[in-house]
Length: 258
Image (tube, rainbow, N blue to C red):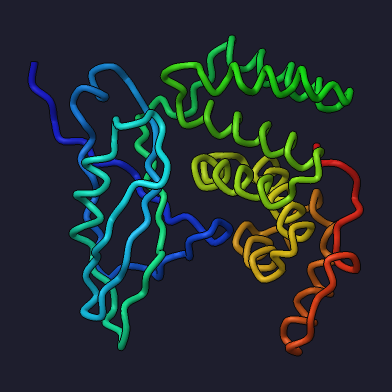
């Protein structure tokens, strides 16, 4: 059976983890989709850390996280090794990028996965946190999650973390969900997902990132985000004036994520 070469869609992951967002590359080489994964319909992603050298080439490329483990690591690293950036006076270490590997079926969600996610969200709403954690653990062990399924899982995990007061960890999950699948959503659900990310950012004290995400996902025009718009305006004004922003003063009090 002959295979055509399939390239994965690349999405740069924004700030929010320990590593920093890389600037836009001058040259971007798409990774090749592994034929074995293509045959089996496997989707996933790889998160990479790397250094941009003064001449704009990349070095110190390492996999920081991936799903499924080991499936897409090699093509992701090989592609990033060929990227180039604008030259600079000094190396720029601890950059990061998220490379999703998705097929045309990326929007599919199996019934068993949807049922577990729905049950986990219901358990969180009812404050049955141990049950929610158990369901999320079961989800994390399901093999062959599509990008849509993994994004839904990360969204549910983010809501669980937010409800537990783990706002920085919640932001990590919400950001990953948005980067993996946010662009494929219709405007209304996309805004609702992005609102969760901004709420987590604010409550985690990640104020500049909260403003950036509010703008990037077009929340100024979204009715679902009007409750957090005044908070973002307050933060934006303070940052522009070089003033400190208090987490307590700026924290979003619009209720738990939905």
